[in-house]
Length: 399
Ligand SMILES: C[S@@+](CC[C@H](N)C(=O)[O-])C[C@H]1O[C@@H](n2cnc3c(N)ncnc32)[C@H](O)[C@@H]1O
Image (cartoon, rainbow, N blue to C red):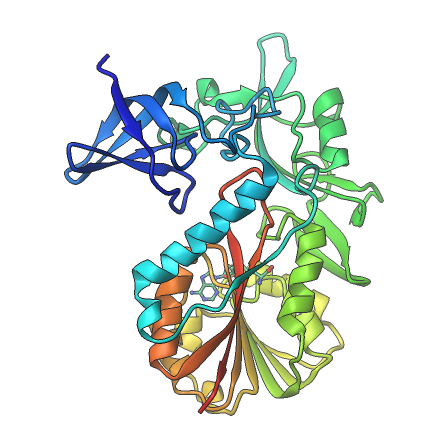
């Protein structure tokens, strides 16, 4: 095995640091900027390579020993090698870098990236675990291993050797840690299952943990005093205290005649927005999620559309005047048609929630070119110890 010695440069979206070998970029996981590392090459593409650390020659001063015994094997966390304050700094730099690379500064200076953070441990309410039964019938619960994406069987389940048995998880909420330690849930079947838990969570059996495979998957959470119901198998943000802060930040200062909640999921933002607007419109293509939105907004004034936002912006209803638009798209960002529709709106306030700074920056350039000003850019640290980045971008029009 040939070892190379490199000095790492910045961290990029996804959490790898980049370095150079013979002019080619190398992506290295578990590295911090400015480290001298011995690495070996694990993958080759035409213009870049992947490497893995064989030895740390000169560590960054911010490097710490990962507290979790499963770090590096489990696919869950990839930033435990940095102290929490530095994790935030790295994420802030990744966001700024994404906007620079997208060419945003041609339109305006980037406003300072402000940070909203909560507890760095014991925060995560939602997990997909994988369970297998030994020939003796004993159940083992685990998480997908690092890099296990390729090693799946036709059902989409990871191969057994790609599951890391876990008996604890320090980022999980107390209820899930207790579940992992005792693992005494009756009736849990082999295969993949989702768990949702937390102090303000209630399953139909009244417990504060909902386990997909042995109880009803229906879950109720309280956010800012409001009850919201959803199916644990669908999307729901898994850091509930940060979600409350996100709702407050999204709704802050908004009011008016008509608001649209695009990519609305189970209607969390719409539930709080409808108190501030005469008319609230939800658009969501997943009919199951929209069904929950209907339940969550029952008796409250709203109209919902079960279709893609791309289709909805072409409908006559989209030609009405909107005082504000809130949007929370998947990682791929806004559809091109949605960006065009937004740019055609007049004095509208935009609140764009994003789980991918690269597509957020791409869309921010289109919105800036369409006359919107990025007024605030907030990093909400929903997933400490991981490189996941969640942002809220607030746009308005100055002219
Ligand atoms: C990141 S989630 C946001 C959900 C919601 N705002 C929340 O916080 O619970 C993105 C949502 O967009 C929906 N979605 C994905 N592509 C869509 C599209 N093209 N049009 C409408 N909805 C879409 C997904 O089903 C999912 O519910």
